[in-house]
Image (tube, rainbow, N blue to C red; front, side):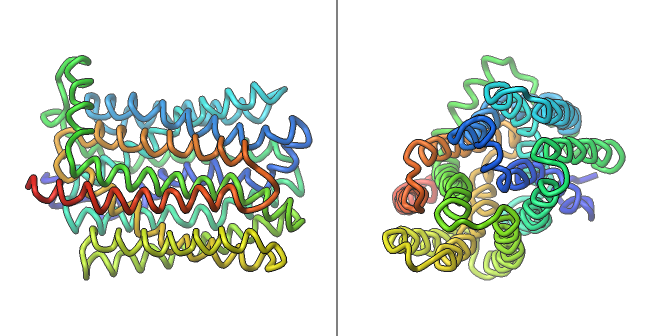
Amino acid sequence: MDHQQHPPGNLSLLLGFIIAIGPVSVDMYLPAFSLIGQQFGPSLPQLTLAAYFFGFAAGQMAQGLLSDRMGRKLPLAGGLLLYTAASLGCAIAPNGATLCLFRALAAFGAAASIVVPRAMVRDCADGTKAATLMSGVMQVMSIAPVIAPVLGSLVLLVAGWRMIFVVAALYGLAGLVLLYRYLPETLPPERRLTTSIRATLRLYGEIIVEPGFLSNALIGAFGMCALFAYLAGAPTVFMGEYHNPPWAFGLMLAVLGTASIGFFRINTFLVQKFGAPRVIDYGIAVWGAAATALLLQSWVPALGAVSVFAALLLFGLGYSFIPSNAQVGALSRHRGHAGTATALMSTLQYCASGVAGALVGQFANGTARPMASIMVICALAAAAAAAYLRPRATAAI
């Protein structure tokens, strides 16, 4: 079977469900931030988020290496199993330190749910076809941010915040079942890496200095940094500054998630019409405008929560043009080691996200200023990467 020419028809659905473990793990417990803070301390929620990001980053390198050497299915199964077990650990954590530890372990396992599906897309397609397939995966995944915060809010009403992690474990178990029964192996033995660990580490060095990878990886990393600055800061703004109850905050996240489904569809249309690089530029411009508007209105709190929501909605539109397109651009020259390259890219992304979450928690002042400032800085940095690094990648072709 020619995997690149004939990807399975249900691949987008299956991979989208598995990649959604990421937003499920984050969005479902955001409405519980205030309750977790009351039990373990006001800064603990942001610390658990940062622990998750750093655990995710640490898991990328190992998962990418394993998936290129052992095939895609076995590392993904091991990661999902660890995620499921660690999520149950979060549910019974007796203190904040233990909760952070289990969140990091869950993220280490969940890293496979990001690295492996993205590499599987690269196994099956390239160029515009890969961008279209990845956009389809993101459309399926984008359903999770709609359902997860509402589900988390409902669980809070009937069973408390610990049960949220039990539900997360059940999601991981469902992913294992789907993987075992339906997901194909897309990396045949003859295409797997057989080099030594030392040679593979050298490969990481070769990948990161390749201009096409570096430019797109940095754009994707700055985009993730902005996204998770918003996720870390939004609970404080909506439930703290504007005193919205957890269920209302969960509903707001669901609306933003619903909008993102349409945004990813717009991205698919624009990519087919203009190509991924130009669409990335559009996304950075929209994201920068939204972040600037958010920063300006943070100095006029009387504008209210609606103005914050509108700015975040506009940011969601711009951000939806970044992940799948930057991913395809970064992997375009790395088909033979897509898992390794994906792991390196995701490591950069989640390290940046961990820093963003920690900074938002460190500088939290009850307003949108910390998260908005980080989002603006990230937009400027992404624009610089597109302006100065992408021409080098084009010239090297």
